[in-house]
Image 1 (cartoon, each protein chain N blue to C red):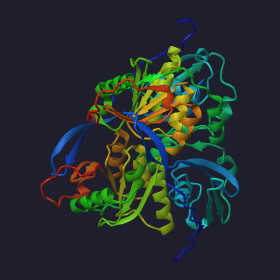
Image 2: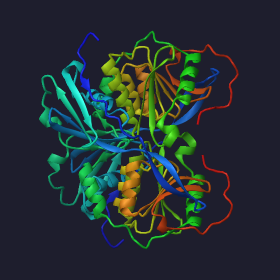
Image 3: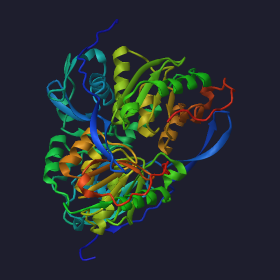
Image 4: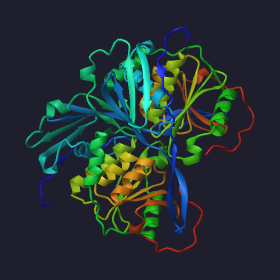
Length: 282
Length: 282
C-alpha cells in the first residue's frame, strides 16, 4: 500500500460457548451461544473505553471505534493495535499522540448494543455536510445477489444466533467485508475499521446490516460515504428522514426476493422482472 | 400512596409515521414506521443527555434513566417531570438538587439502541452485591400465559415493527407494565421508571423482553430485583454468566409453548405436560 498502515495483532478467540439448556419438556441439551467479552481500549496508555464484544475482529473494531468517535483523523497516525485477550485489552499506539486526550478519556463502558453517539445537534449538521456520490446506482439483480450472499455466508449467527451481522459489498455485489458482533454498532464499527485500514471508499459500495435502519445506522453509513443501506429488518422515522436528506437509498425488509425501498428510488435500477418467490431468508 | 410522588406530564405523541415505499415489483404503497425522536433530559436546569426514543412513555423513560444511571437515589427526591415535545425536552426538578451534578452532566447523546453502561468492573461488583429473592418460583403454565399475553398485546411492533418491547408480569402472569421503544434499553428503563413510580418491587416478578439477553439486559433485570428474565430471542455468554452468578432464571427462545431455560432451573416448576404445539409467535 502507498501509505503507512498500523501493525495489527490477530487476536483470535473462541466466538461461541456451549451451555447446557433445558427445554419445555425438561429435556437437557447443549446449545452454542455467542461469546461476549469486555475489550478495553488503551489509547497511548490512557484507558479510553470498554466495549462488550463478540471478539471476532477486535483490531478492526478498535480502529473503527477510534475513527467513528473521531479520536484519530488519519490511519497513518496509528502505529499499532495490539489486542491481548488474556487481559481483555487493545493497546493502541499513535505516531504523534492525540489532541486533548485527557479531557476526552473519561472512563466509561459501552455495553452490548451500544454506540457512543455524537451529540445530536452536531449529528444533524454533519448529515447536511455529507454528499454521497450522485452517480452511484444499484441494480435489483445485484441487490438479490447481495441478499443471497448474506443468506449463505458462514456466520456465528447461523451457529448460535443472538448476534448482529454487517457486510460491505462492491457495486457489482461482491462481498468485501463481513463482521458480526453482539452489538450492531460494534459490527458497523468493525467494517468501518476494515475500510479505513484498506483505504476503501464507500462511494459506490453497498452496506448490509441485520439490524434496524435507525438514525445512528444511517449516520454511520453516511460517514463511510455509502449510498446504499440494506437491512433484513425495518427502519425508524429518524433513519428514514436522514436517508432522504442524504439522498441515500434505504432498503428495508430485504429477504429472498422481497424488499421495501424507503428512499433514494432514483438510485435503484429495476432490471429483474422475474416472478417473486417466497422469502428464503430467516 | 404513602410517599410523595413526582408530578408527571402526560406528553402523548404519534408513535408511527406513514411513509411511501416501493417494493420489488415497483409497486408503491404506504407503510407505517415507528417514530424516533430526540428527547433531551434537563435535570435541575442542566442538560443531562439526549435519548433517541419512540416517545411512548417519555416521563417513565426519564424516571428510569435517572434511576438506572444513579442520578437520583429516591423517587421522593423528584418533584416533577415535564415533557414538552414542541422542544423535545424532559424537564426534571428535584427537591434538594443532585450531588456533583456538574461533573456528571457532560453533554452526550445516547442514540437508538444504546444504553449508557456503568463501568464494567463496578458492574461485576454490583452483580455480586445483588441477592434475588430465593423463594421466587415460576410455573411453566404461568410462563405460557406470559408468552401468550405478549403475543396478543396491542403494540407498535405489530403495526410498524422495528421496535423492542418489554413487559413486567406478576408472579401469576398478570401484565403489570408494557413498554416499547426504538432502543431496547430505553424500553427497559421505561419499565424501571414505572416500577419506581409505583413502588413496585421485582421480588417475584417476571420480566419479558423482545431483545437479546445480554450482559446489560441481565444487569438491568437484577437491578430491578427480578428473578425471571424471558426473551423470544437468545442469550449471550456474559448474560448467561451473570444470570448464573445471580441465580436468575434466564429463559430464551420463548415462543408459543417452546422455551430454553439457560440458568436458575430450580426456580422453574414444570407443571404443564401438555403436548408441545408448533410456535405461534412471530
